[in-house]
Length: 272
Image (cartoon, rainbow, N blue to C red):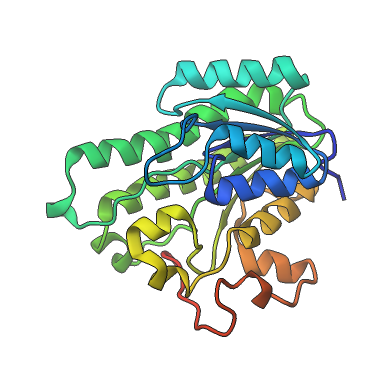
């Protein structure tokens, strides 16, 4: 299978959580990782900056380029992509990981939260992919990977947090549309979603340690992401992957090692 050694992987929101874990996993294979995220200085509540993420990825064996980038601004996206291409000569992989979340019903969702989620999730994903595509079309095994859920019109996923669901499904619809649009040009476009909740700093803000103890570590999503990126792009597009299914297909049988608290009952993630 194609290796990530020497490939350039552009990841949004890679200063912490799942995006950072994907960057570290790619760096272990010798990839050039572009960390496109907003946090350049320490956040008062959330650990991780683009700079310490770059240090971790360099220690892991890759090259890293930290770029302060707000994906709500297409000018900043264009500048980040240009900097990546100038440094590494191209882009082979685009990982749309950055996301905003606010879980509330219709009456309890301020419009500023609606706007934030749609600007980051749906619009940011579209804009980032659009900016990377001219370079992906020249790559040897180009992949776009969205951290987005499988599409489901079950009312329960819409009733509880309509604004968030629409914003995330916007990312999922990008998978469906772009996979078909670029199928004949050899660009793989896929989605990846966790089977269980993932213990990240963002989850701690939402559910605290009690929720996190029933989840898995971000490394399970990262390992699944790298496995997808190894695959031949022309033969792997338009899929809505689930992390543990990807790993089982790769022959990984011990998923307990990813658990935050081995032996605890795992809590399923949304949309599954």
